[in-house]
Image 1 (tube, rainbow, N blue to C red):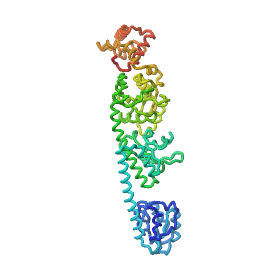
Image 2 (image 1 turned 30 degrees about the horizontal axis):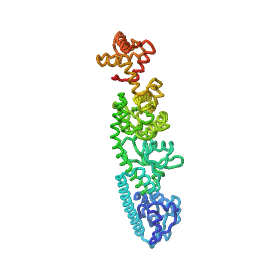
Image 3 (image 1 turned 90 degrees about the vertical axis):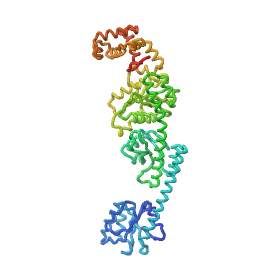
Image 4 (image 1 turned 90 degrees about the horizontal axis):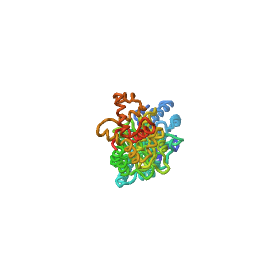
Length: 517
């Protein structure tokens, strides 16, 4: 009920004394009569205060009375003229001073009638709002059960309320969008929301509000937000109720999709393990089942973080989807490393993916206390996916070594042969490693002689016998013997640059862990 609605009740014959049309459009939540000098302790906000002005002993009392009811949250004052025969000028001036709408109540009208008119109308409005709310909630739930898309329900809510609605995530990915937001607007929304919701954000003279979607018990890095145009603190309660119901439906829709994603996540974990182990063909089968587009170039990602591993996987998935459309394979391997595979859209580049990830993950600066390190591998055809993962792992190591708390690096930042190797088809790389080091690996498998580990250490220490021996905690003659066996098995002279390069490249293909070919 509005103040104007009280004025419009003919039987009361109230008269407007102070107040603009905008002020009389304020909502009234209740009414009560008082003649206390300071009734503020009985006012909770939104009341129409009805008074006979018995409290007025002198003109200066009016200012104190009006100031107290305004400070307590009253929205209007209805003054009876029984005591003074009219509303005194000092009461009028006080109401004008504090912008408090003032109505005059004729002596022929009982205060009880004014209060009854307000309370019955307010009660009726509340019942009507409750009924409408329940009906709307039932309609939305029925729509969800029938499989209606969240975008359709959001658009329908926007039509009902006249408020533009969007749903975004903590990294700024658009889940449902009426129209695109600028990058700067998204930055401001998610960073302000990270401090707590609901909240209002002003950007370029446009006010938007951010409301929570779902429970606040999840990690803030994976939160969803309902973004609406306008200041939520100034919205009609019925509009806010409708928006809250949409947020609840969005939370239900998210749970439904998360349940489906868990099935795909199992396959993504398997793909990640296979890729790290070098089993590219088997990994591709899992990635295809997830729905990743492998017809064009693909990009691999590797990430580590202080975040719980499940949160990191969810955040990386969300962040990647801000850059590329379609399915994404993001799985966990070795307990703390997240491996992702995405298909590049037409015109997409590794640099673009890295830039988008940097911006998206950077929005988590206020909700992530630890570090996030992400490596983006060299774009390649699907046949070279294992190499792409290895280049992503190298880039991740560079990111982890940087001073940035949230760091994204590409294979171009590694500046090593890993970049060149990553684009060679996996089968060709494996065949090369088998041809160069197959006899050494087979010998180690049969005898556990440690030739491969000794070779790695020898090349890592630039061919120094003594430093290699110190690193392996063996006698220098042992190192000489083992390297001699490697040279004999590979038919290569490690004293020459050409042969040493061949062996180095073969080791790079194998990766850091001993393996079988």
